[in-house]
Length: 210
Figure 1 (tube, rainbow, N blue to C red):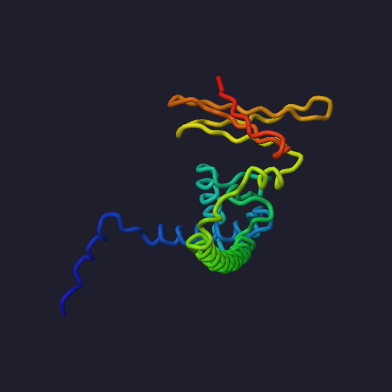
Figure 2 (figure 1 turned 120 degrees about the vertical axis):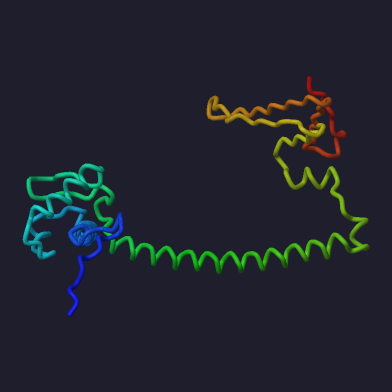
């Protein structure tokens, strides 16, 4: 009968049985910690729950987690998971995730419905604008504009492409706001047309901007 030869050493980098056991224990410990209320865990309770005979192994795990900033000590025998805030344990996150997924599905359905209505509106606009009978009426008059914005001061800006327009936040004075418009062009002159409130009194006035 041939004698069994010596066992071959494990390949380099292969974890030992102790390392595998410690890694599995660490995974279970972190899961237990994340599920704890407010992320706070009693180490004695953890040792009993995980059936760890050598409590030193629990302390080895906590020392590593504390060293990399994942936990902090709350007292001599309790720690807190810093990666999870109060009221944010793993189960609550899972429930919140389900809620958010349902909300996303609802929003996607609403978006599809809005896209459908958008297509209908765009087609209706094309039907109106491309109709030969409507093309001769595709304009608004000075009176139309004044009638729609009765009581407002109307300005029409005629400026070259690339003109910048800035409207600062209005300043209040005696309960009234003072509005300003800043225009700047580097490629040509700018004209501002004052669209009169009384359309029948006089034509619009073109005012060059210095």
